[in-house]
Figure: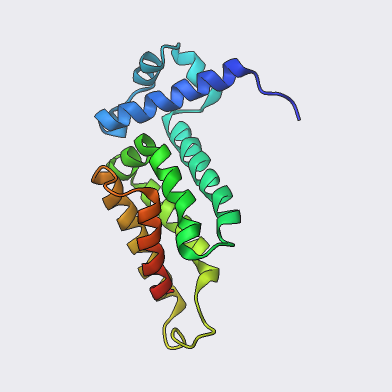
Length: 181
């Protein structure tokens, strides 16, 4: 595998950081490529070397975070609910600016849906059918309910300045999901 030039990585990180910071200040629709370039301290043309437009940039940034969450989920799903959720809440905390901006932004409503769809996909295989407690419940209804609750709790936690540690959140949300699914 070819090694990626550190200058390219550094430039891409500056571009991503710039767009997130700008989204925290104003609506995505009002942000221009020039705004991003100015904030990242690069030329406009440099952005176009890496991204087609600001929508491509936002899409790639979103995809990057969803992929990181997916990697976390690959091994975390082998744990109990509370243990499995700790790395997710830690990731949300470590990437606070991204998640707070994306979940609050009126210009990026598709992010919430992408996060929701990712969570639903992860919950799909977790429904308890062995104990008999969910036999009369429709799987789609259960997934919608659990997914909506989980995303809403993440939003509440971030919007309120993360008043509890990732471990406390994981324990509480894990207990609720265990009761639900």
